[in-house]
Length: 421
Image 1 (cartoon, rainbow, N blue to C red):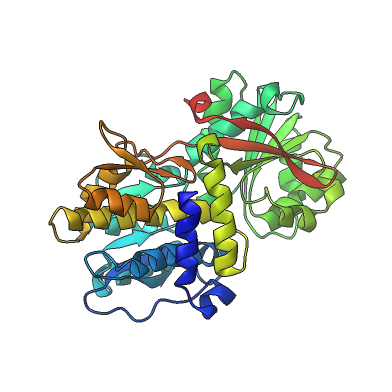
Image 2: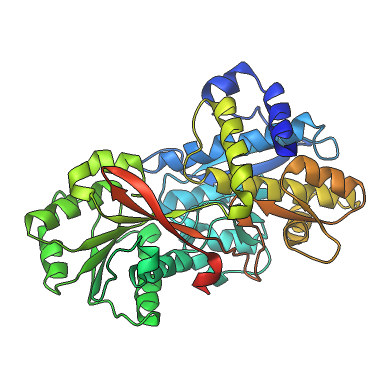
């Protein structure tokens, strides 16, 4: 139980405020601090993303700093509030890069990446995003782009794979005539092409695709359009609020086919929002831990609960992995005598995360730091599974297929990563 002891040591070094809120801001950065930018929405409709990510990042930074820092330097954070929009995200990225001179970024999200991507690439700032499944990142760059969340390409493939194979539907009936409804926002349209292409790959063409404008009070016309194709199932990509309205309109129109929703709706809050009766039987997608990391996830959940007072929320495990990768890349750069710069961090990310002959498998910062100081090379294994970055910084991961049964989400199957190749 090495990891548990490490988490306990983290807790021993954190203050009462962190225990109470889990949102303790970093103190002002000193000149020699290792400054990391949090390029996330902290205000607006998606403020919950920043609220989910920041305390986990701070938890890892606390561990690093309590152990003496990296070469004696502490990790501190600067927030860049994207407000969940492209324009604000571009402004926030510009400030973090040019004014705050951050060494690395945690973020951005799919909501704002289209505006900040070129700034990040041109300024060669290593980014490890725990939230952006956007297909923009599938082949954006090979040097500074990394993520610890699977691409929407894989998510879309997982939905199509499950909907066309009853063993992933808990024995449920497969879909022969699917339709797709997608909200017109960057984080949602990213699913459109992967879902369409994947259904076709598995031998079933999407009968109708409807893009809709978010935040409308009613979706009767869009529902009429999609149901006119007489689908036996609808993949619905949208916010929980819009999804609830669409499903209500579809129910009122007499639609009796199936539903498949994405990660944003696959939670208890959506059941409460939409009503248990309305969503009974629908399927949902969620990222799950690999079998190898299940025990470590449970330890992390306990430690995070003690640290923040809250349960781990969406993107929590992805953030744990993103921050460990950044910290270990900094550590390796320092151990090997180099300066800790944007370039050396980017150069060391794959060196601490990807497999290789003779590498020591580590699962947290402390064990990775010790191995590096002992002159060994390391292969970081994360909570979401192996963090093995491909040439564009993408990872693969399994997906859980859930279904609402008796008013509660129940996991009915897991689509392994190898089934999505």
